[in-house]
Length: 476
View (tube, rainbow, N blue to C red):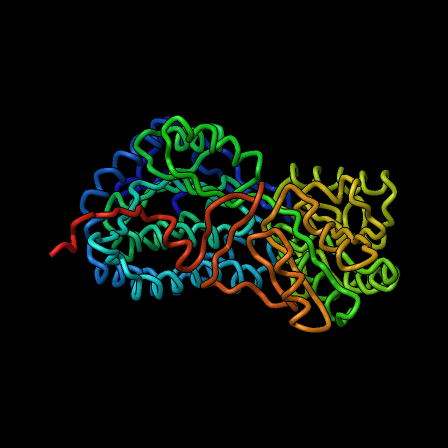
């Protein structure tokens, strides 16, 4: 039985300082499943004190000790994959097979990738008379979202442990159970007390207390750009490092010589994956103006076959979005698209056919979208695709970069060489060519208002290290 009314601090499950809780609602049924405890600044203070004490000893552990610890975490994690998947499906609505394979699987993949980095990483490097030493940065505050809960937790916690840091995690209040299971996994794996601490709570309370805390050396935040700005402002007086992975409005450029059916079909399916609740979703499809009608017809065919339904029912393609607030926001933006003159190709406002409860959104496609329309500018974070027309390659690149965001970009062309050339022109931290997925060992993160810093692989690991130059170390 997962303990939802306590926090994990200093290697033990402890009661909150103040007794306060919130219901966790199943988005498929709109019914409350259980309560989860909410923390306060006092709980954060306890967790930070534990992490600060633990840092003294954990920061000087050997590579071999941390390798063994990650290997044990991986073994325990594998034994609870189905449980993690079920929790994610119930709390944020992902179809159960997708939650088990992709959601829970992403977390495992990041831990395994981090283990490979740690085994081979050079912590010391001679440079003239100096020795360059990379050391753990200290106590880390981690704030994670609900859309890919274990993906985001694991790609922060694993490299922090590998680097020798200690940490406090505040997971989303909408998806607490998978995070609590993760705490149990770390406990069973023998993570030393105080190294990992978990305090559930709300952003304006627990998140703010963490961002402002003078004994937290770094904040790693994933969430909206609006919330990320608040975190950075609160962190500024203590000059702590702030690493952020924020919003996106990612372009999917499909050039006139691309395999249109393949590129459009793949792009629409990718957009609808996870009910469109991915920060790097290819939400702006930019296509040759002359092929707009053909593209719209292909996209409609995919949308019409995308089945929104019970996450545990066989044949469900996408589940609900996470909560009523998100549903209302998405509905308002769909209506805005219609009002501003975009062509509604598929879907639209309201619940999908045959559905009478739950936060389900109809898989929606708009064509003839222009760059000044609200749906072309704002991150919708739901299964809503906008298709924009460009008269040539130069205008396609211009449209792709005409956004305050810069998390991801996608390019499909008739040749890899042409896709490479266009990909280089897109101002984004991740660009995927010819339908290829991300490499977990490559860095993930954004330009502009999509954040700063990088996660995944070696680049994500180095976020948790300070660089020290010791002059004269190599002097004769």
